Length: 75
Image (cartoon, rainbow, N blue to C red; front, side, top):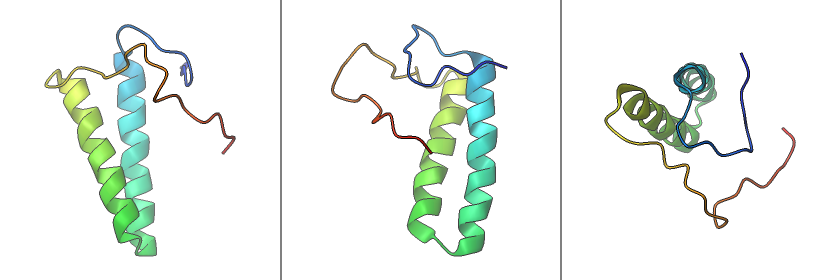
């Protein structure tokens, strides 16, 4: 599985969106276990967004714009 983190594509890969959604579900469980309510909420919102993209209810918002670039920080 190849995941393109910083490059933008015209359409998201269904495989990548499914992977992201799965990881968000796991992160949500960890955050819940830690009692991090705000983090749980934010992760849940991203999880819902990924589900909407996966089902086709919402297009991926990966436009060619510079104002929303990732910081490039290592995690």
